[in-house]
Length: 152
Image 1 (cartoon, rainbow, N blue to C red):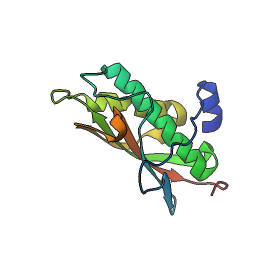
Image 2: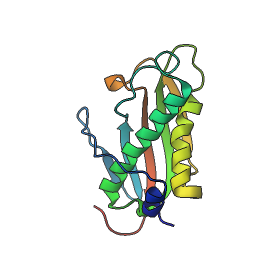
Image 3: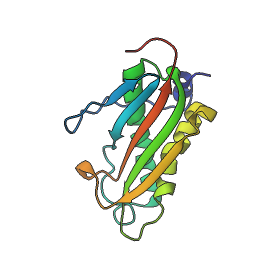
Image 4: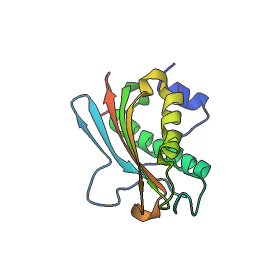
């Protein structure tokens, strides 16, 4: 089953593209690689460990991935062109004593696994930080390998 059909099967819809919050673009293709700029998620602000729970942080990470997938569809024309999820870099705004940033970013990794199966097995970093742009609780960037035809 393709990723577009799987997205529908999971009952998920991609949000509208977010506008860039600065002097950058949402994505850049170089060869077979698609580099996606970091995405936060509206409605998920504050710091994990103070303003929200680990589970709420995981939900924020899932929402970030949906924003990243919207950028992916914009770049490639279809999620079915994703050959592999190569790398995630996740940032979690959290308290000084919060050490579960990897568990928060698992929300993103798990959703990608549900959507792409083994093609979603990726390298990853999960970093706790004091603050993120626009007050987001989580921000994630992603690198994908693309194939096939269509899109830009």
